Length: 460
Image (cartoon, rainbow, N blue to C red; front, side, top):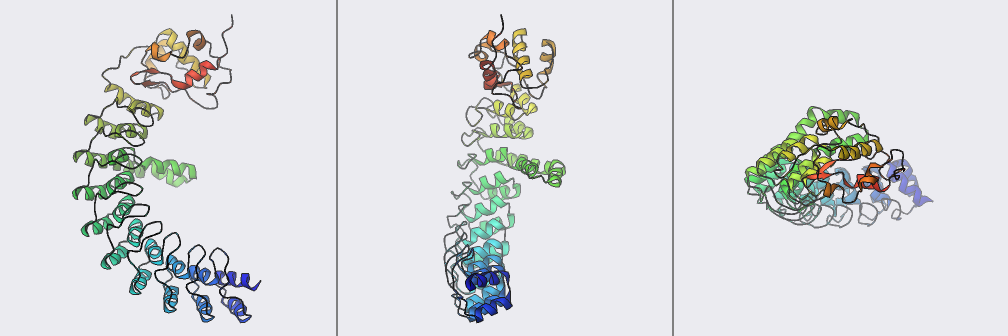
């Protein structure tokens, strides 16, 4: 009973209650709770008076356990310099390993607590100790953009090219965060601009994906390899072409952050969308391979097409991006743009498709499209003539190219014309028919085929 009371009194910083419990011989080193013991709990919260009382009762300063491994780590993570000093005076192990950040120095570096970092370094903390989420203290500080801490670590001979952690190395971590001042410091200390590893493969990819044009420029000036392959999006150009700017708006919408949405949709969003264009331009000016294959989207053109970045698409096309290149999640850029609902980009891609045979819809073709559109609850463009004039601009049907041998390989004319608007098929509940040019031919795609297969047979 006294044990649990002591832990929670220490966690809450209740000095008088803590003293009373200690006077009743509560076990000062009892293990348990999220923070392992009373000393770690008080250290995490920065309750220096309680920490002092526990230490005077011979609390084990190096006891292991809990979320933060030990009391010094917990205090360092929170930036509680007074508590850190008290623990160090009681010979806390400055290099003890454990916790998400590996050791006290990495924890303090991650939080940017320069005063605590200085105290730990003066007690001979190993500046290059490996372990934890960020591999080492320098990477942790670089990720957070804590330039003062980075400088302190470098002055203590931190290995600027040490490998490990989520981002592989310090320069990649700083590049991903867009911390140009830290990147500059690392480069001036001979950071390997082309070092491989980590979540994003290399620093240039990380900066390109994050939309940090200033960092990209700095890396290019240090001869970063623009064509190195790796990472989820294959290379820096593909990462920049897709970019993460639109994700911010989507995440804000899902989170209900109305003000953020308004800002993102206004001037802030325009600025964000300008960044990938600038980065793409820089990469193209440095002879990046516009048709490099690999990554989730297969190539940069497909990435930009799905992301709706029409100006980036234009830049890539002007550099002779292969509009018919196959690969990636959507197969080609045209399908990617169509699925994303980006009519303008579809038009741009079709304009570059020299082998496309553009034709108007026949009456039979029109009947299939009209029935399918009705089936999923979308407004029909009307007559054949109206459809022919409106399909190029209708949001759901961006362009129609007729090639029956492809379109009807799985659909018989009788079945297709008998699609029943009242039937219950797999494409109901808000699904839309997406009419798109597939490899430069018309494809109503799987959804129409599924509609046809689930259709009610024609009567008579």
